[in-house]
Length: 282
Image 1: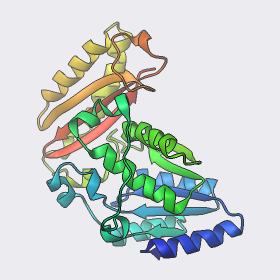
Image 2: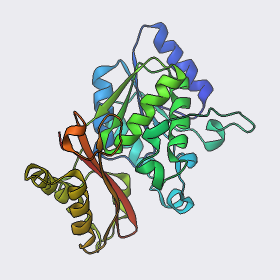
Image 3: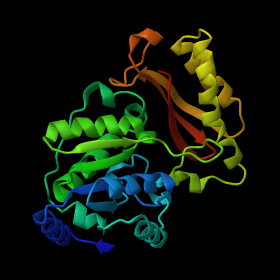
């Protein structure tokens, strides 16, 4: 595995690979890698000739400055994991390399898909995500890029960005990887304390229970209300939102018949750590 810090070097290396007819898969990350990330890397290694992974803690997608400061960073461990997973190129740029001084940045318009859930709670977040991912797509020119379904709304945003920019590549959404307890793997899990961590798996446990509530005749609004109330009754848990939406438009539904596929998306604080998760109802 070769570690690259500059756009110029990465462009030269990947151009040489393309001349040989090799396909390229990209896995954009912010580091602090876990088995969820590695499942994306392993799939990229399997599906494409060359696997590129980026590690960049993107300041433009943090609407909370403290969250940027506390975001876990473990580059040495990440490098070891990626070498073992078969990554070919690791791109680890500085902020100055990514965001050149004086450069005019792209603007995006996402409409209703960015006006719900994370779009409400984290203003500016998706614009920051789209900006960095568009830069990576422009630089790497991948044939395919891999993202985890834990960030379900983010995948919809990235697909919209791809359409707006006219990029030609496949966006591959990979299933959530979970601990045995059901807790969705996340870099933020490292910040859970001995006191709060035992409560974190209850988020997904409650989502699983809610499938039965739906089957027993409760409406989407009823299910949202019960999930929220029962999680809020648990120690150290506080639901920021739980919304059941059309899995394509991401707009809230009133009836289970309002959409072909429905998904419930949650953001819940466990102590001071904000966790997200989701579950499909149909």
